[in-house]
Structures are given as structure tokens and as C-alpha cells.
Length: 222
Image 1 (cartoon, helix red, strand yellow):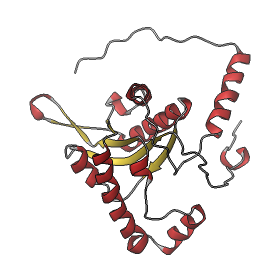
Image 2 (image 1 turned 30 degrees about the horizontal axis):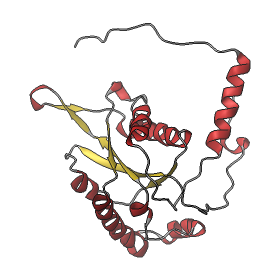
Image 3 (image 1 turned 45 degrees about the vertical axis):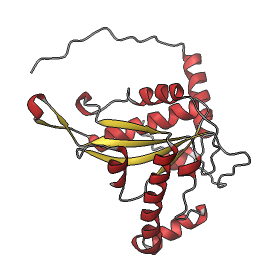
């Protein structure tokens, strides 16, 4: 196999004070991020979405295989099909599939099988994991660390959208096979997350939650 060539790293070292300031500013920006369920129908330029998705596409991945596809959906008819299919799965989840413990954990958030944001938001981003790739002659190529790679890319995307001034919601109806059919994706791709993006509706509210303190999430070994 031909080895990939190398180029000089484009790295500009920052002064410690600037590093600290950037870290504080980004922490404050991302701490203000909240999951939104009430969206405005205001349009968002596709160029903005493309920049955010391409930021996500720069995420690290196993063996640099970049095993992801992002399907950006603004067509009202397609969003309606997705909503109807998702709500069908959600009704089964809340009615039969979810354990009592799981439903108890969700209860404080007030979620249910009704998902109007799938119609209301200007953009849905269906994120697919490529379970395998295709080489010369149609040969199947194994992909490595696919869930980890797609998860990192999704985190990049959520951060990029928030940084751009948009609200997001991660929606994960299960199973999500209907997205392959609606989005016309091949069998090697598996839908992982349906990311809703747009402006929050006027007067939108979010649950009054508290995030864990550093001592609950950081373990130092120095």
C-alpha cells in the first residue's frame, strides 16, 4: 500500500494568556448551548449549513476513513415524511419498548411521541455512519472505529452550529431505518442521529437543568 505523503504542520503557538482567554471564552460559549425543542420557521442559508458540516467533516476518524455522510433536508414534503415515520417509532417507544425506568428518567424533561420540530425547523441533518466503504472494483473496505469517529464528528457539528448562532436538537428515534429509504442512502450506511437545526421560536423555553460541577466529571492524577 502506498504511504501517504506528509506536509509541514500549520501550527501557530499562542501566548499562555491568549490560550487561557480562548479556553474560557469557548467554555462560556458552549456552556450556554442548550437543546431546543421549539423552533422558528425562519430560513437559514444553505451556505451556513455547509460551512458547519464541513467543520464536522474535519474531525479525526479511524485510519482517516471519514466514515460519515450528512444529508441536509429542507424540503417540507421530505420533512413531513420524516416526522410521520419518526413519530410512529416514538409511539411504539413510549407505548411498549421503553422500560419503566427509562420513561421515569425522561419524565422530568416532558418529552413525548409528538415531534413538531421535525416540521417546523428549517433544516434536518440526517447523520449516517458508513459501516464499510467501497474500493476498486466494488471491493468492500472495512471501516474502523466507526461509532467513535461519527460521534466525534457529530460533536464538532453541534459546536459549529452553536458557534454560528443556531439552535440544535439531537433526535434519535429507534430504529431509524426509515431514514435510509427517505434519504435514498445505501445499505452500508446506518442512520445514527437526526440533528434539528435552526433559530429557536420566539419565547422558546428549555428545562431548568444544572450541569455537573468539575469535581463530578474530572479525575486528576498528577
